[in-house]
Length: 308
Ligand code: RUB
Image (cartoon, rainbow, N blue to C red; front, top):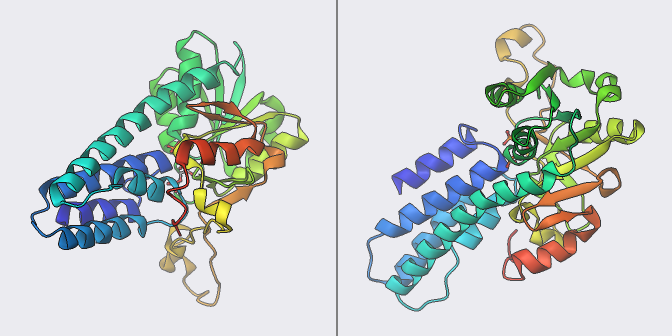
C-alpha cells in the first residue's frame, strides 16, 4: 500500500501532473498494488482494491482521466482472488499501452491540421497538444509556437523546455498577453482534463480566455484529448468539480505581509463552452465537440456510469 500512497501523494502535490500522466501513474500504482496484494479471502481482496481505488481517485477532483483510468484498469468480473487479480493486471496493462499509443495517433491525426509555416498557441503543458505540434515539426513543417506561462504553477516552463529540446521555434508569453498575441496565431492547441457530454472543455485555468480570443480573431481552436478524457458521469447530470488549490501557489503568506484580510482565489481549471471549440482530436479521430455523447457511449461504455 505504501507505494500506492506515495503515488497518490505525488499526484496531489503535482509532482505527477497533467491528465494523461496522472491516469497512467494511477493505473500503474493500482496494477502494482494488486500484483502483490496478499490475501486468500475474496471479500478482503475486494475491500482492499476498492479502498485503493478511492485513495487514487480522491487525490485531484477535476481530471476525469483519473477515475476513468482507475475504473478501466481496475475493472474485474470474478469470483476468486486469482481471477480478479489476473483481470486487473491485464486491464491495467492494456490501459497503459493504449494510453501510450493514443498519443501517437493524436499526433498523426492532429498534425494534418497544421500547415508548413503555421503559428500555434498552446497553454499550460499538455502532452497530447505537444504530440500534435512535435509530429508536425517532425514531418518537416516549420511550426512556430507561442506558449503561455500558465500562472500560478508555470507549467509553460515545462512546455518551452520540451519544445526547444525538440528544436521548435518557441516564444514564451505571460498569460495576459494572449489576446494581444492572437493576431499572429493560426491555430490554438490545448489539452483536456475533462470533456463533458455537451462538448464543453475543462482544462487549465485561462484556457477559456484563449478560446474567446481565438473566436474573436477567427483562429482555429483545437483540443487534443484521448477518449478517456471524456466524462461519462456528466451524461447522468454530474458537474465537473473545479479544483481550488492552495492560495500559497499564488502568493506566499510572507509576501501578503500586512494584508491578512486579503482573500486569494486559486481555481486551477476553467470551462470552455463547445461553441468556441472547432475540433477535438482523439486517438479515434477528429470530432466536433457536439459528438462527445457518441465518444462516451462508444469508447467508455455504460459501465462507468457510477463514477461520482
Ligand atoms: C494540466 C492541464 C493539461 C491537461 C492535459 O493541469 O490542464 O492541459 O491535463 O494534459 P495540471 P495532457 O498541471 O494542473 O495537472 O495532455 O498531458 O494529459
